[in-house]
Image (cartoon, rainbow, N blue to C red):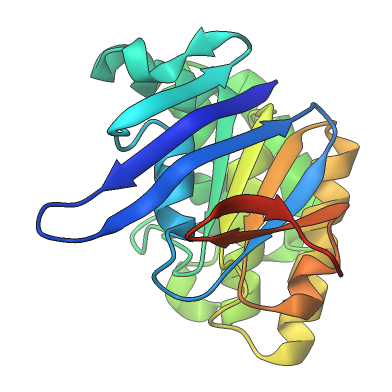
Length: 221
C-alpha cells in the first residue's frame, strides 16, 4: 500500500535529514519507527503525508506518486485516506468532544443523520460516550488523546500516522492509549506507523524499524 523509494530530504543550511530511505508497508501492518532526536522521524511522516516534498525519491501510495500531486489533490487524499494522531493532541478547544470527533466526517461531506451514529460508536469505542458534550478544557490528557484517536479513525482511513502520541502522558495513561490505538487500527484493517522514542511503545506494534543517517532498517531487537 505504501512504498518509499530512495527518499531524501535536507533543509536549507543544514545537513541531510533523510538519505535514500526505502520502505514498504502493507495493509493491516502496524509498525514503529524509532531513532534519536533530530534524525528525521517527524520529517519522514510529513513526507509520507504529503505535507512536505522530498529533495528526491518517491512516496508511492497505492502506486500513485504523491510527490507528483498538487496541494489540492494531496489535501483531498489526506482528508479521505489518512488519519493523524499527534503528541500535542490538536483537539480544537472551542468544539465539544463529539464535534471534534465529527470534524473529519464534516470535511468529507457526510450529513448529520449519517454522522451522529458514527460519532456515538466512535466515542463508545474509546470509552468517552459520557463526555460527548464536554469541552477539551474539562478533559485529562489521556481523555484528549482518546478524542484524537477517535477523530483520526472515524472516517475509516487506510493509513494512520501517529507521532509520539503518548509523549505528554503519564505511564499508566500511555499504556492505555497505546493499547487502544493498536486495537482500533487493527479492528479497522488500517496500516499504521507509530513514531516513538519509547521501546515500550514500539513493543506494541508488529515490527520495529530504526531510522539513522544510514537509512531505515528493521530493528535487530
